[in-house]
Length: 206
Length: 164
Ligand code: SF4
Image (tube, rainbow over all chains, first blue to last red; front, side, top):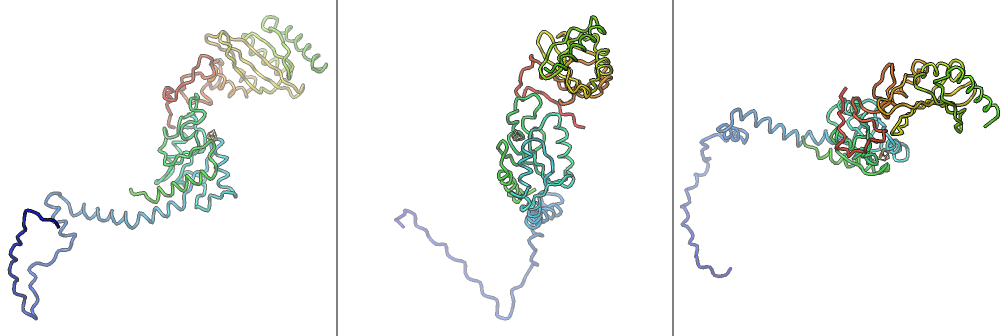
C-alpha cells in the first residue's frame, strides 16, 4: 500500500455487445464435445491409437479407485498363512493361533496347503538343505502373496549367522514384506507384524 | 561294574582275540558300556558279522567320527537286547583318505549314520549303497566338523540352492 513509482493505467474496456433480443436464444455454432472426445482428439495429434490407450487408462483408474479398495479390504481381512513350522519360533506361531492370543479374530487362519495360502510366515531357522523346498512352497502359492520373516533367524540368520548350514536371512531366497525381530518374538509381536502387513495391503496399488 | 558284566567282558575279550589274532587290538573299559573294542579297519566286516551273529549285538545305535588331526577315529555304538548293554567299536584311520568298509550289509541302520559321518568328518565308507549328502545341501564343498574347517562369513559361503 506504499507508494510505487509506476502507476497502472487501466485499459479501456471493450464496448459491451448488444444483448440478444429477448425471446431468442444465442445461436450454438458447434455441438459441445464431451471431455473424453476432446482429450482424444487432442492426444491423437501426437500418439497413435490414443483412443484405446486413454480408454484403458480411465478404466485402470476406475479399477484403482473403485475395485482395488474392495479387493484389498477383502484380502487383508482374510490372510491365510501356510501351516509350516521350522524351528523354535514355530512354538510362538502355534501359541499365537491358540486360545490365548487367538489370531483368528483378525481372519488369519493357517492352512495346510500352499495352494490355499496367500501368506508365508517363515518361522525359524532356514538351512540350505530346506531352502529349495521353501522356494517351491512360495512358488506354489497363488498371487497375490506376502512373506513375513519371523524372528532373528529368518531375518538375518540370528545366532547361527556364521554357521555352515544356515541361510543368513530368508530374503536371500524370497521377497520379504515384514520383518519381526526377537528370538523368539512373542505372539503379540507376530500379531503386530500381521496388522502391519494388513496396513500395507490396504495401501497396495498395482 | 557288576561282576556279571565284568565276566562277560573277559569272555568277549578271550573269544575275539582267539577269532581275530591280528586285527583285534584290545578291549578298554568305558563307563556305561561293556567296553570299547579297538580293531584294525582291515577286519571291519568280519568283526561286525561276529559281533552281531555270535555275540547278539543286533542294533546299531550310532556311528560317530572324530578328527584327531593326525588320525581319524570312527566309532560304532551297538546295543544288545540279550545282554542289555552297549558296546563300542572303534577304529583308527589314516588322516589322508580315511576309509573303512561299510556296516550297512550287517546293520542296515548304518546307512544314514554313515552318510552323516561322511559329510561332516570326511570318512569314506567303501561299498556304501548311497553315499551322498544327508543334512547339507547337495554339492556342499566343505566337511564342516573337521578341525581344519574355518567358520565363514555368510558371504564367503557359496551354496548353490538346487531347485528341484
Ligand atoms: S529366532 Fe530364536 S527362537 Fe526363532 S528360530 Fe531362531 S533361534 Fe529359534
